[in-house]
Length: 258
Image (cartoon, rainbow, N blue to C red; front, top):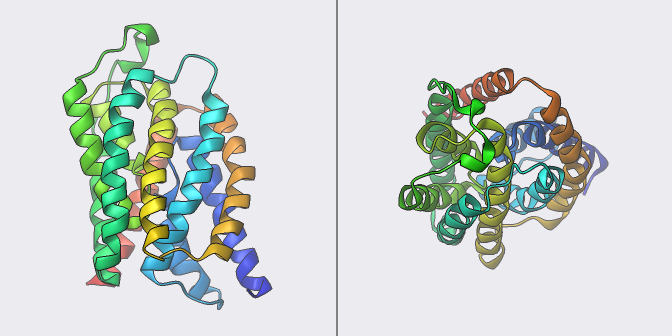
C-alpha cells in the first residue's frame, strides 16, 4: 500500500473516530462517505462500495470498544436496554452483512442514503425534558426496542455501519431514554451489532485488511479522546452538529446516485 493512501486512511479514521467517540456513534455514518470520496479526491486509489462497507464494519468493531470502555463508570450503561436491543441488532446485522454480497454498488449506496436521510430527520425531532429524570428510574417498551433494533441491524449490516446513528434518535425520541444514557448504551449496542456485520463481511470476502488495520489504529487513538470531550460538551450542540453532518452526507450520496 502506498504511503499517501496510508496517511489518507489514517486521517479519515482519526477524524471520524474522534467525532464518533464524542457523539456516541460508531462513526460509519461519517466514515463511509469519507472513505468513498476522499481517496479519489486527493489522487490516491478509490475503494468500491463493497470495500468501503467491509472496512467500515471491521473498524466500527474496534472503535466502539474504546467508547464503551470510556463510559463503563458513572451508571450510564443501561444493561436491560443493551440486552434487548443488542441481541436483536446482532441477528439483523449478520443478515445484512452477509446478504450485502448480493447487492450492487448502487444498492449499497442507496441503502446508506436512505439510512442517512432517516437519521438526519430524526435528529431534528424535538426531545424535551428527558435529561431531568434519575437514571435508575428509566423504563422503556421492550418488544418495540427489540424489533426496531432488528430492522436497524439489517440496514446497518449492509453498509458496514453498526446503526448507532439510527439507534441514538430511536432511543431519544421513541424510547425516551436520557441523552447521556443513550450515548453510552448505544455504543455498547453498536459494538454488539458490529460483530454481526463484521462476521457477515469477512465470510463473504468484502474486507480489505490493510486499510482496515490502519483505520482500527486511528480509531483506537481517537475514539477515547472524543468520548472524553463529549462528556464535557453541550449535548444539544452535539446533536445539531451530528444532524447537519448526516444531512450533508445524505444529499451528496443521492446527488451521485441520481
